[in-house]
Length: 157
Image 1: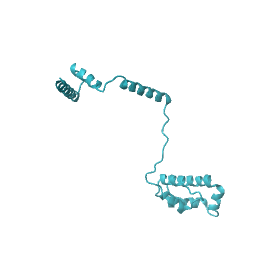
Image 2: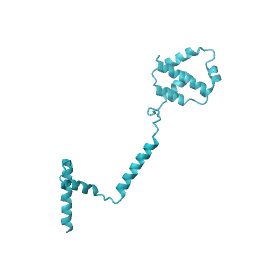
Image 3: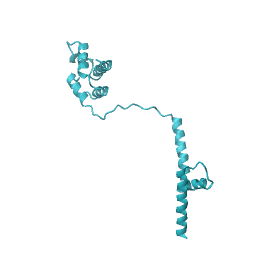
Image 4: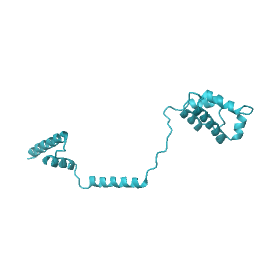
């Protein structure tokens, strides 16, 4: 028996005591050697994952402490997709405020008088200056934009 399984069974018995009370625990296993009972539980529950055991402990029946077979059946009923949710780290309020401020500035920049084609004009300016940092793709786009504008101007004239 693994230490993890032994710890899980110990946790289950602790949970039983907390949920149902120590009197119910002593009635449940009256006259039995508790370490032997726990070893039997470890033997029967081998093969279950810790998630199965945790799920069973979170879904204990309200009517009373489950016996070994009932607890095993609880473990088997854990849905496949159930995952334990871990609490994420708390966000630093100053950092959140700074990022929100940056996003608000960006939103203001994008919505205050900027036309939808401003990005085209900026790239075309760089193209006209023969900016060496333009990629081949950007140069090709500029040529297509200039050709499209020229065709539109001829059509409108």
